[in-house]
Structure formats: C-alpha cells, structure tokens
Amino acid sequence: MSVLVYIESDNGTIKKAALEVASYGRALANTLNTSLSAVVFSSENSELLGNYGVDKVLTVDFSEKFNAKVYADIITQAAQKEQASVVVLSSSADSRYLAPMLSVGLDAGYVPNVIELPTQTQPFTVKRSVFSNKAFCKTEITTEVKIIGLSNNAFGLVEHAVSPQTESFSPKIIASEITVENIDKATNKVSIADAETVVSAGRGLKGPENWGMIEDLAKVLCAATACSKPVSDLGWRPHSEHVGQTGKPVASNLYIAIGISGAIQHLAGINSSKVKVVINTDPEAPFFKAADYGIIGDAFEVVPKLTEKLKEFKAQNA
Amino acid sequence: MKILVCISHVPDTTSKINFTNDNTTFDNNGVQFVINPNDEFGLTRAMWFKEKQNATVDVVNVGGPETESTLRKALAIGADAAFRVNTAPTDGFAVAKELTKVAQDGGYDLIIAGRESIDYNGGMVPGMMAAALGASFVNNCIAIEIEGGKATAVREIDGGKETLTSTLPLVIGGQKGLVEESDLKIPNMRGIMMARKKPLTVLKPTENKTFTASVHFEKPAPKGAIKMVDADNIDELIDLLHNEAKVI
Ligand SMILES: Cc1cc2nc3c(=O)[nH]c(=O)nc-3n(C[C@H](O)[C@H](O)[C@H](O)COP(=O)(O)OP(=O)(O)OC[C@H]3O[C@@H](n4cnc5c(N)ncnc54)[C@H](O)[C@@H]3O)c2cc1C
Image 1 (cartoon, rainbow over the protein chains, first blue to last red):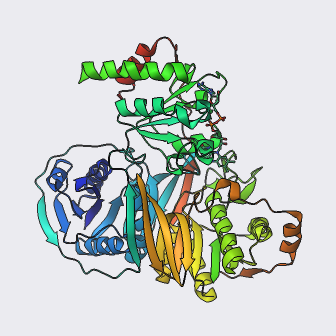
Image 2: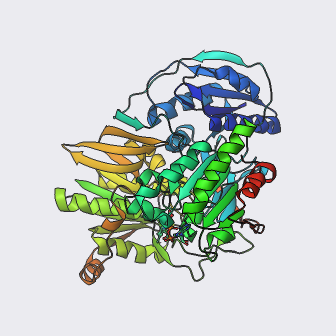
Image 3: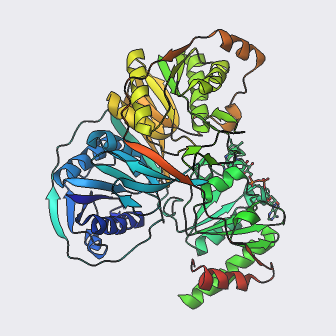
C-alpha cells in the first residue's frame, strides 16, 4: 500500500502545485498509515521532494515531451508497482488531461477539484467544489484505488523533512497516435494556473491600448494577467486570458479585479481565489459584494498609483 | 465523415444553486436548462464540418426525458439526429461508458464533448470515453481541422498552446476558441420546425457501473463584509494586503 503523487515540472523545475500535491499526499499517507511515493519525469531539483515528506521518488527514465496518453500509462504502471491505494494529481491542464485516462487504466474512481483531506476514509469520502464554486459536494469513491485531483492553492505547502529513497523507473512505453507538432509558450510570463496573484481587467478599461498599466501592476506583483469575457471577445486581449465560468478558472491567493462589474459568470470562475480586491468607479457594481477589499475609484488614477506604491513597498521589504 | 457531439444538459449560468432532500439532490425548481456552453462551441464547430465537408452530425445526451428539449435545440441548430440514453447521469464514469457504447455503435470519426460540464465540473467524460474507445484524445481543444483522415488540433496548455496531429477516431474536450462567441447560432423558426421531424432515438442504458457517488451538498459559508479603502489612501490597501491578508 502507498499513496502516489504525480510530480509535474516546468522546464526541469518542480512546479509549486506539485509540491502542494506532495504536501497533501504526505498528510493523506499519515491518515492512511502508509508511505508516500512520487513519480517524477524530469527535474533537476527532485531532492526538494524530501522537504515535503516524500518517502520514495521514482524517476522515470523517459525524456520525451508531454503526451497525456503515454504519461497516463506510465503513471498507471507506477501506481501498480507501488501498489498505490490513492493517486493524487494537481489541477493543471496536463493533470486534468491525463487523469481520466489514468482512471480507466487503473479502474479507479477520479474526483477532481478536491479542496481538503478526505472527510472520512470508510467509506472514502472527499469534498470537491461543484457548480463553478457555488457549492461543495461530498463524494464517495467506491473503487479500490482512488484518484484525487487537488484544487490549486487549496491545501498549501506543508514542510515535512524526510530523506527519500530514489529509484530509477523504466516503464514500458506505449505508442500514441498523437504527435506534438509545436508548443507556443511564453517563457517569461507566469501562467494564470500557476500564479499566486492574478491581475484582471474588464471592459471598464475602455480599450486594448490601456493595458500597459495592467501589465505594469502585474509585473511588480509577479502576477499573471487576465481579463473578463467581453474583453477577449472584443479582441482586446487573447482568449487565453479569459477567466470565469466559460474561461479559465482562477484559484490564486490574490485576485485583483479592475473595471470588472462582477457578473455571476465571472465570479463563478474566480471565486475560489483566497483574497479578492476590486477597483471600480461604480459603488453598485456586484463585485463589491464578492470581494474582500474594495476601492471606489477610476482605474486610470488608482492603478498607476497602486503600482508606484507597491514598487516602494517591494523596495523596502526586499 | 461522421461526427458525434455529446450534449450535457446543465443549469443556465445565472441559475441560483440550491439543494433539496436534506441537501442530497440538486433543486431543479425554477431552473432553466441549456446546452452546456463548452458543448455549444463544439456543436457549432460540427456545423462548420457539416457545411464545408459534408459531415453528418449526431448529438447524444445521457439523461432523463427532461433533457429532450435541450437535444431538440441541438437539432434546431442543425444536427441531423439525436440519441438519448435513458438513465440518470449519476457519475462521470457511468456517463462515459454509455457514450462509449453509442460512439462504438455509430462508428464516428470525430467525437466532440466539452472540456467540462458547468454543473459538476468533472472534466472527465471525454478522456474516459477516449480511453474506453481506444481513440485519440485532445483536451482543452481550441481549434480543429480534419483533412485526409488526419486531424490537426490546438490544445490550450497552462501559459500557451500546443499544436497536435492525430489519426481518427479522435475525441476532443472542446471549449471557446473552437468557434468564436459571435459564431454561436440561435435556432431560427425553420430550424425549430425541421427539428421536430428529425429522429430522436431513446436508447436503453447498458450497465450501471459507477466509480463515485455524490452524497451530500453544501453551500459556501456567507462571505464576511468587504473592507472599503479610500482611493486616496492606497497605503492602507497595501498595509491590509501585507499585514491582514498576508498575500503580498
Ligand atoms: C453563458 C455565459 C457565460 C459567460 N461566461 C463568462 C466568463 O467566463 N467570464 C466573464 O468574465 N464573463 C462571462 N460572461 C459575461 C458576463 O455575464 C458579463 O457580461 C461580463 O463578465 C462583463 O464583463 P466586464 O465586467 O468586463 O464588463 P462590464 O459588465 O461592462 O463592466 C465594466 C465595469 O467597469 C467599470 N468601470 C468603467 N469605467 C471604469 C474606470 N475608469 N475605472 C474603474 N472601473 C470602471 C464599470 O463600473 C463596470 O462595473 C458570460 C455570459 C454568459 C451569458
């Protein structure tokens, strides 16, 4: 028996979401009185996993680009080898892509968007968010092996130092009918999925030419930039920045909404962010009911000032 | 080319979410149901294949008789035929199994589902279906072309996108980007009239194997009151974010 976590890396470096998955896996292994194994594809800093309680690191001897079917099959083999009773993954695009295939491969029930440790283990019951964060659902997993998709930033990082055993893992590699032709990824930008802070702007900005101040603010905060749906539909910003119920979900620690009214479909997608700040000229904007901190004011005045003040703050607290 | 579009029947995005039976069941009362938005983008892309490449387009839903209005809407938008697998969609795996059967029997080249349903946000049905069918799978699909029995698809990844080629059959988890918002079609009178004559076949479910069970629902605790900060007092906001919220 064991708990197995899938550790994702980005350019050879373990992602923060993966360390969160390891932290969760450690706590779960303690609850189940078992050990924690991790499956790692390629990363230079896998020794880091010992800080988060991983007992055993399986380093996969396979260096090709991400392919969901192939990866799902490798994780299936790792789970079988480790006799995993629970497999834990993050909520990244890649994890969500491969998890359903892993579920079929292992004949294991999969529950995504899980927000905390199982509420009980007999029967095995987890709490997940449903209806785009408008409700939670306690869900029983009735299969012998279970797969948990952990919501980003739901559990946090918990340090727990151990000395992991490492092992090279050479699985059987299956064929795939899918070929990755090209990856187009900004290397110097934080993605919305990985960002601790997201700076998001709406139609209140009036036009695409005004996004410079949004990018400046995002830069001081090392934040990702996002936008409301009409902004992407109007072509002011790329679709990849559209957040909300029909766009990307956001579960950051800090979400700053600028010139966004706070329509129900927008809020549904960003509501699991921990702290929300709204800047809007209209005191009646619905976002004020959903946020933690608010400023009634003109974005064109408030945002540049906020950026300057944050620069000073960062300089003092560096 | 034969296309199957999987249609999930979900509460409209503005719906109030409530539960009944001691918080064990979603409360349908007063809720308007629609085609799942992610599926609607896929259906609209399927219409493009119908127009340009002469594809036939079937739609399918796993659900009770109440979902037929949603399937009729898909027919009015232009699908050729509809199937309803007559069983409650209790978990993602059970739904995927039923859809897999329909997909196998129909011999489809392309199976379009949404990247997730906006009710349970499971995001697992298309991937499970692909695995069960032994078909290729592209999730978060924002573009698809099919030429000479080969598909080229674009997948949204965290922080960018990826272009893939694949053999058929192919299952995609679609979303906005497959078509633009402005391409979505509201059914016209003629479409609605024609939809009445199109076949809607009710199928018996095959098996009732589930992996999970939703046992209890709850709503988030009410949010604390917002703290307002004066626009001339940005220092206070920074102080609150640093010392109180501890997020900067
Ligand atoms: C099926 C469906 C799905 C949808 N999915 C999504 C989704 O995923 N994401 C999403 O965002 N929307 C979604 N929407 C759209 C949603 O209903 C709203 O229309 C949208 O969120 C509004 O965007 P906005 O806040 O940018 O624009 P508006 O509602 O126009 O709000 C602009 C705000 O800017 C403020 N403002 C104006 N000038 C200034 C200024 N100088 N300084 C500061 N503030 C200013 C205004 O007071 C106003 O509150 C969906 C709608 C439907 C029907």
